[in-house]
Image (tube, rainbow, N blue to C red):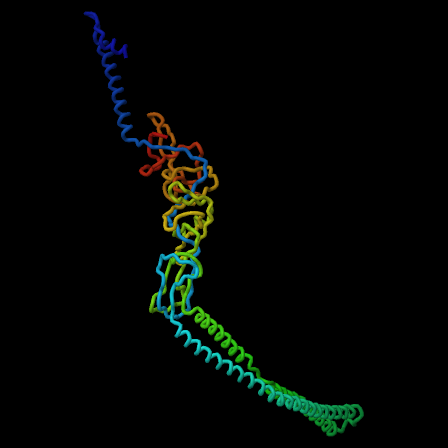
Length: 451
């Protein structure tokens, strides 16, 4: 620079050649102009080429955190069942009341129950009389049919003996006719054709009579056997069983009614607790559901669950409940109770050693995965499977020197949490991954900023 100043400020002696000096000064001016243009070009380039933030892949395990908002409740809901269809006359408690074992919950009308007992007792007596009549008819019919059965056996034996005799007689006559025919075939005269034909016809006739006797024997035995079957005593087993079942059901129902009377028309708390729900109202009848629900003495954390949350919770991990004021409970066993499985609605319940019923609480289910070799921030991942990709910093040579650009690398997202994604693909652990590359495309020029 000093040399340029000397050249620029040089004043030749009078009479010297000034053309060469002017040429040198022009050259200096040209170089200065080029340097200025280069600086301006660099400044413009820095304004047009985007500056990117980069990171390098990490070897790490992902962390899945499921956060739930819930409330602390009493555990062990105790259903209090009243007599079905009983008319409620008065209710002694309201929802939220504390009760002790044996405390009166409600009263119901017992006059209707007494009337039902009378009707059921009458119906039971009628059923017992009907069963006795069935048994008497069964005994009489069995004795009557036994006599008919004995006669049927006698008829069968007589038919069998008679048919057997007829078959034997026909068989003997057929055998004699066949014997006479064979004797004539051996010793008879050859020209006595009429005699041979007569013997042959006699044999065929006896054979036909024998076959007919066999058929008649079979028919007679079948008919006699049907007579035996018809004479077998009929049974009343099905009718008796049906009637006995009706009697047993009536006896059970009658016992239930008498038990209702024994309580004096009052329903008492089976254990101490809080009235959590009360469905009974004066003037209305008790249905099939519990008249009231009492809470137990335990404390539980409850929170609603969706189907996806239920599936994540089933994968395990550490479960932490935050009761507030710095109190945290760890390693608490939990259970999932279906509320409406068709719509994917569930409830999480976890019994606690301490807590204030009605207080709000939060829970976290924390699960760590296996260690993945390549993990990048979610902000570096573009798209979703199967078209997910990263933009990686690469360098290329240009006439103006080396420049950096973004190169697309297709990847597969193996798993992700709220911050990182584990990927597989043509990525190395020392690659520079562009973060937040929403407006970049494959091949765009870039400048690396903060790592």
